[in-house]
Image 1 (cartoon, helix red, strand yellow):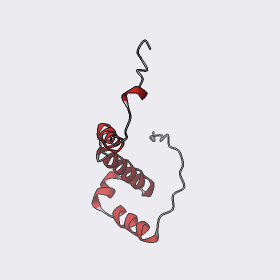
Image 2 (cartoon, one colour; image 1 turned 180 degrees about the horizontal axis):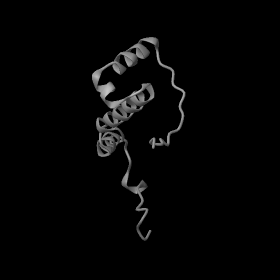
Image 3 (cartoon, one colour; image 1 turned 60 degrees about the horizontal axis):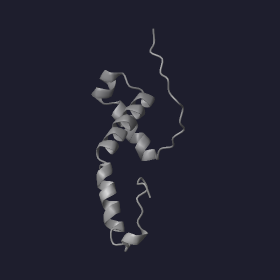
Length: 88
């Protein structure tokens, strides 16, 4: 029984040199051992690439700290501040 893949079709265009690199990768022993065809290899590379991309992104708190630093120089007087959750 074949494994059914639940995928969404995507039309992707690659430059010719990328197609050549993919074809060369398909001839590697690792791809042959995995039984990869072109679609399998591209799915694998996208999955690994997205995982690496997410892992290398700065953490959300770093983004918040940068935002606070960039807006920290704004002059906001105490009289214009309100406690949104207070009894005022």
